Image (cartoon, rainbow, N blue to C red; front, side, top):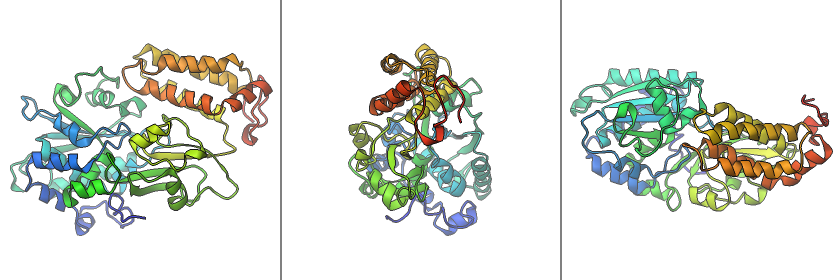
Length: 433
């Protein structure tokens, strides 16, 4: 296992406090950045091959370069800390255990881009993360690291924590901006992109928590070093979440490009005794499901796409042979239907119909033609919505039906679920055992 960087402070007692953070080298990257100009910092970030850690994987340095150098309006940094993807839980570790590293990354980004104000939009349920961030920001202000004329540089930067209200759709950057402005969190049409017209109609950069927390390491050790810690087009050390019936579930730091097998066996200790791997989701519930023959796939944006899924948030959920894929698909469909903002008809109506058809199959009232109907509905949803939530319904459901079609057919033929946890469900029954 590699040396820790992003997670270095996770096991240090009280590392969330300014005193302990600085005792372990904290805010030195910020001081170094203040001796560099913005263009130099942006070029280092480009060299690093740092890609967005929230799921989209857009190159961070290129995104930064889209922000206008001059603007009549103040420029904004918005951190997407609305971690709501089912199966994803890595960003909260950074906010709870190493909040000053994140603040340091915000300051460096703001310095490089000429940004005046920053907002960390945190999922409302993450109360511990909110408290830690607010406490760390208060300490940073008291030390002169935030506010006006930071360390005598003439640079002004104010940073705020903005709790969300629990809406999954606010994980989409423009829906998040709408909510930040006090509106309903409904995604905007793009273009214009946030870098041109973002928060309060001003130029805005939106980055994920882990993306910003990686910036101090790029400044401290250099873009080439960061790129060397990964594979082509995917730079740096990165955090991976592992959950399911494994020996050591949790958050692990590994190079970009690590294989799923390595994360399962070397980091998480393998499957629990008596549990056999059936499938896994590589990066949150919106990704296509994968089978054990894909365990040697590298965790990279291109490599996962080639393997038939996507890296997403890089939080892997492993499932054993007792997992009912019909029930899983139905539960996910209900989640996405509930979280649809309702703005786009294919998502609003289509997600409900997908959930209803899956409910019928799962309850033992399904028809064989329902399987092709599901695939047809997924095709009508995907690519026909303002944001990617529609795809988040269509892609996984399609994959469950295609990869585990025999299991769906068995539910329909037998009129019940054959898996132990749900074996008492009988044809026509809507109640679980």
